[in-house]
Length: 412
Image 1 (cartoon, rainbow, N blue to C red):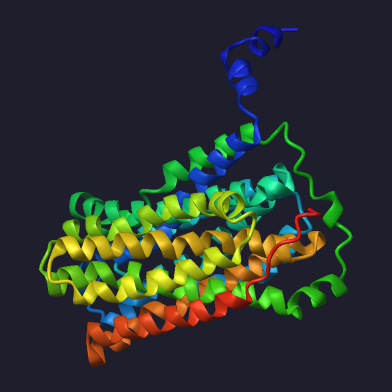
Image 2: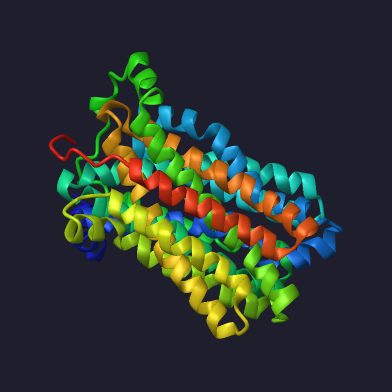
């Protein structure tokens, strides 16, 4: 009986007000933004890391791409697991693991141990994949089919927001507390996001019972379907461009334009920051402006963003360069935001999380190869050639967009 006052207290009243599907999106969004800030943060301070650890451009780029590579290799098995377990508990377990890995990364960086730092970040990748995949699955289940793309699109703005935060705050944290601190600073918002998700998701029906019967044949069909591969390739091309720009624009601004690391981080952060808005609105644009059609949005995304990326190295003023980054970030991520709801719409509901994980793995494959390949092109041929290659890749993405499937909203 002593629990009755507590049940009527402020905590109970707060819980009664939280619990709608959009509250779940908020909690998961904060969490995914925090883990993605950790994902990209070395890119904003690569010159400092290279100096402190005596690394070349391509080797330093591995600090960013190792997470993409590990997620590429392990993302699909993680997705298959997410299709078979309680997604709410999976998010909490993954968050606890990521907090421990933050602490390990900080200790390795403080000791100057490059390979231990690489290992800790590599292990963080599948944990991040679990949070992302479970998040998309949970949000997809929390909304009706006509609103899933809008809701997942809003959630997909979280990684872009996290990239912006990482690029913006990384140099500031490194300057104030030392570069090793960049690997620990995002633990608090990750914990807050997870706690908010746990509280708000209790009353929603987001069970995974209907996926427990997923069979080997369901997974086989998923991986042999052309439309699934088309969506995955779109994600690969789009994220290759995204990772290249976010990884090397800060260094370009520092080495070529001549701005400080803090100023370069601020300017480079506009690219993912505007993309956070674009990703969040991608589903709404497709649903409301194009009558639930996905193909025109993806085509527009690549056709505009690819030339805009190349303008970065043609710009003769900071204002033009910033405008190019804003346009590229806005349109490129408008298309990227649709890749994940498309993956869920294209896959059978029994293996929806695996479909999202496969698309994410292909995206992270692009993120894995783009930073070091970009570094090699920069070292051997200069920034103009590297950004020219990015232009060609983006135009290939525009051609691929013609084959993007349109969703059948009759099912879940």
